[in-house]
Length: 251
Image 1 (cartoon, helix red, strand yellow):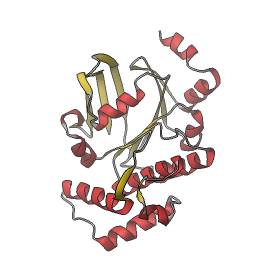
Image 2 (cartoon, rainbow, N blue to C red):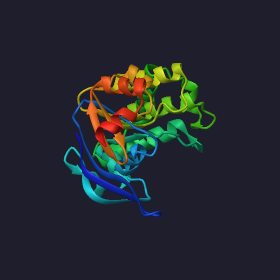
Image 3 (spheres, rainbow, N blue to C red):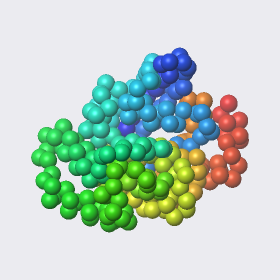
């Protein structure tokens, strides 16, 4: 599914190296989690994979199902099946949630050579998925994320993910600012979308989100590299002891 080899990245403006040789493979249908101290490069990795401006790849490769992600424009990466849920979803005043969703879904279907959804078919599908994710129908009538609570914004992104049906879902600290109930709802949405043909890369600081999502593999990232990989027990070790012991082991 996702294969990253020896990825080196620097900030263009500051000429500062952030990723220093990341190697990562996420197989089809698997959920991988990345944890690590602040400044370790976790969010930078998500930005680079999604095509955000301001970063320069100086070495290495990133492929999705064998296709060169780094050679694609951001919209091409989305059409190829990559989805990024932001740490802080932006508000888009004046753009209705339904209009945004239908435009995004049909743009991707068109890019893949599929017929666009009619208004009736789209409405039926979005209502069904919103209900399954416990999203109030009133949210669909509002401008994108405007006036939404933190939990509503994150659930709205899970709805976008459900509608777009990506192959590779990257969640960049999607648990930031969420209370326990909101976190459970987001995790339930993620779990409902798990399965063959879809993989997840979950970036988080906290074990509590992983309690609900139960990743297959956990990676620890530090100083721009993945320094340790293990099972869910690795996240429990971090929760109990912090990162100091792991960083000493790998120094």
